[in-house]
Length: 424
Image (cartoon, rainbow, N blue to C red; front, side, top):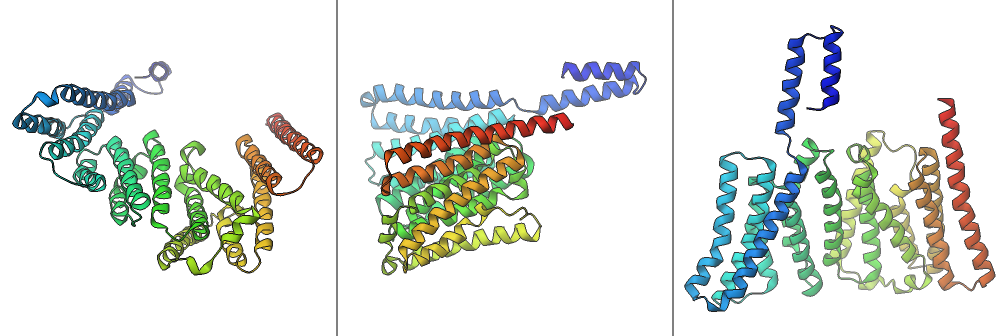
């Protein structure tokens, strides 16, 4: 129990605010709460220990592998799987702590992959790497809910992403099974949102899941750059609006992966579209029906989130970042008719977004958002140096002006904070 709490309880007893019996009950409550709470270090070292143990066993077996008979090889191939299952069963039957569950889950996850590969090698069973990964994913999926292992869930998402990339980028096929496999982990994610919203592991999920979806999106698209740019920008709009939901907006900024990925992705995509030559590649006849359908689904999902925010009166103050994907969608169709005008308006959109970020940073008195807005403007000016004829003197003056803007904006923020503290 915390010594500060004990000291305060003693003071309350001396002041006769609470009785010694109440003090004892409070101490028992905090002691029980501290015992039930799992130490994050135990979880981390347990997971690392299971990984290192598995790797050590593999290295030892690999050194002597050629000297074993086929029967011995088969025996050793199933040993990791048997040990992993025994450890998982012991953990469940004895209702062990989260550290045990995480360790057992990670060990069993890798044991499944090792056993599949060893059996295939021993009996020369042919098969592509993508089918091997899919089999591994299917067999490992129940571990997530049997052991409620968050580390296994993260490994599972990474494995699904790798499988989807192999199917989509290497074999040029739509990785629908990867999408189904990714949906399998969503209930576990929702449980974390409900019961462990402020935990660090939940914050990691806020980053891993959108990154996985972002990577897998490209594996589904096959119509070229133009529609891909629009689809990704709409996905970033979806992420940003997800990050504005009440639950995510209450998180610390570093934990709100949806908001950060959505914002950065929007700006990077718009900076790419700000170049004039990008609009020359827009060919409407080369877009497949599947890519159009994916784009429509992403846009509808983003609009549904915006509608939810409006219904719950969480759309004020107006934030252009939430609607930037809709503005670019209009510019996208304009680009087929007037590519030069669409390019100019894209540059104006980026400039306005930079000003909006500066305004939000100044209003909320956050240096990070303020400087982020200034960086957006700086990035836009830097990009224009590559496709416009500007003398080096003018370029130098522009950078001096940007530097002065950084200094002036931060100094203004600093003075504003001092004035606010003086009035308190």
